[in-house]
Length: 315
Image (cartoon, rainbow, N blue to C red; front, side, top):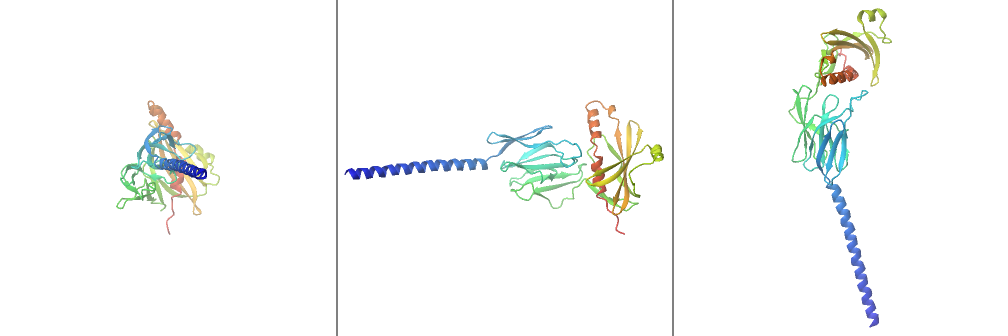
């Protein structure tokens, strides 16, 4: 009898231990499942754009993340410049498309909250119009004049930052191709720019055959007669000799640029003129804006992009 009682008590104890283990294991499993589920269900509830700072996302768990930063123009960082102006959150709350400007053109970047990734390398040119119910991103891309636009859409909902142009749309580009009537050189140039004060008065540029500028030095007679200055600059490993002359007229200064560089074992000169207004003629804050635009005039960017697009005629 005594032995039977002991066996029964041991059996009951084993059952109790087993039940406790199962309950604890279930709780641990449930906790892990809840943690995994919480991570997967984390969504973007709101977005705030702070001028000259960055873009902040408010998440469903109460967290706030800085997901993008403004990058001002400095030291020729043309491809890195970013300002953000608008955003749209995807229907499932996983993505937010942030639109703004690069150096010249409208751009859009997509942030994925699940992977905490801003897809900067998959930059989309244009601004976001909307998200479809299926989770596809709709983009409108226009040139700087706003007259030539195309529409793009995501290839699929799992990678909305990868887009394709919709059929029937005309090509979108602020750059057009032109053939110089004298030299026969074809080149691409920006039809319009987003400058508020500087004007390109002799544009598109002209191309003519030239001789080797040797050390990019002007002789004293030429310099005295024209008031020109010369400088040699290297942009993206490309060497240019730039001659600059200035002439004042009616509250503005006109600067003419002659850029000589080698192309296919020959030398050519590209030339254009820019009008710089006297910023002191403007009240604040326009005067400061004007001065800032002139200080940041992207001469190097324009020179290299246009010059390297040029092609000699097939003869």
